[in-house]
Amino acid sequence: MAYPDNLMARGERVVLHKHPHWKVLVLPTIFFIVIVAGGSFFAAWVNKWDDSGFTTHLWWFIGIIVVGVVLLVLLCVVPFLRWRTEHFVLTTGHVFFRTGILNRRQHQIPLSRVQNVETVVTFWGRILGYGSLIVDSAADQPLEFTNVASLTKVQGTLNQLIADDRDQGRDDNDPRTQQIPRPTQSFDRDDVDGDGTVVRERPGEPEPDQR
Image 1 (cartoon, one colour):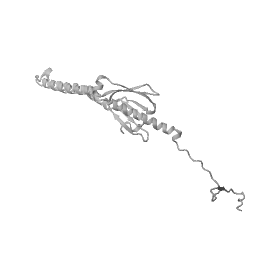
Image 2: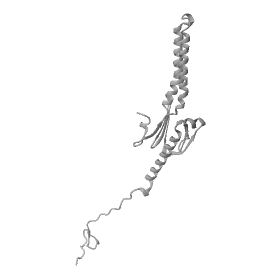
Image 3: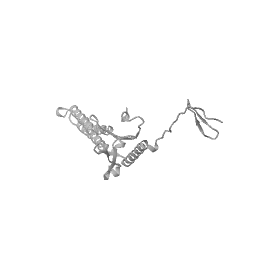
Image 4: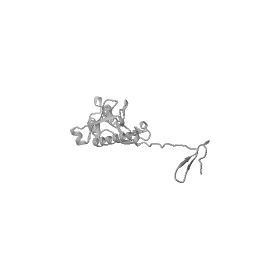
């Protein structure tokens, strides 16, 4: 089940679901190109050596492959998995955040508890379109979400969801918007005279003189 479907309340829906800004993948991409190119160049250079003794090609090729794989995992695969497993989600009722590959950290903030939303944008963040979003809730310490893509859109969406949530809560708690039930009365028998007068007759009472 996709995150955070198993954490949402009935009727709650996802409005926005984001991973960190693509700029966090720039450095791993550069490392990938350098490692593959460097390994290929070194393997071609080793292939020109005399295939005997210390310069035996097989062991050098195995060493190049092992070192290359380790570097690719540490510098490319791990950062990609960290990017892929970090989620920032806005729903109609909560702010969800989860990060971590093996050890996970997760936050779930109801919109009704959000007191302040602050953004921090650097010079490069203004150019590339990312920044940090700081959410101050009533119960916890302020939480900072870094590398948020399309920060202006995210902030606007969050502000609108908070306003809608508070309007809905105010309408549900406002007694003026609740329907007031009409009082009901029961009579044994009601009759209406020709002039519109209601005559109520109860058992055991003498009928009115019709003369």
